[in-house]
Length: 149
Image (cartoon, rainbow, N blue to C red; front, top):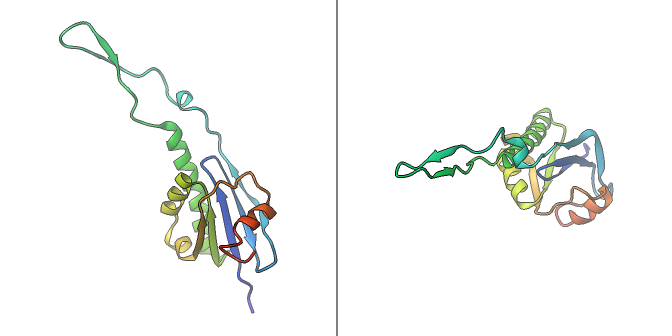
C-alpha cells in the first residue's frame, strides 16, 4: 500500500517553509530546498521619492498627495503568490497527497486565494497561527488536531 504524503506549509508574509509528513507518528520533516525568505524593506524605502504636490486654484496653498499604493503589502502578496505557485506545481507533479496550510490571518487568506485547483483539492486543513519561528516538532504538536502527525 502506498503511503499518504502530507505537505505542511508554514508561512507568513516574509518567510515560508514546507514540511512533509509520511503518516501517523512519523513527525514532520523539513523538505530540503523548501525554506523561503524575502526581504521586506519598509514602505518608505520602496517608494522612489516624495509624494506629488497639488496646487490650490484659489490661493497659493500646496498639499501633498497621499500615496494610494502600499508597496510593503505588494511585496508580501508577491511572496505569498510565489509560495502558492510552488505548492501548486508540486501538486501537479504528484509530490504530495494532502496539504495543510499554517499562516497568520492575512497571509492565510492570501495563500488560500492564490492556490491553484490541484493544491486546493488536496487541502485538508488550515491553522490560523504564525508558527514560522517554531521547530518541526513544535509545529507537529500544534497541528495535531488537523492531521495525525
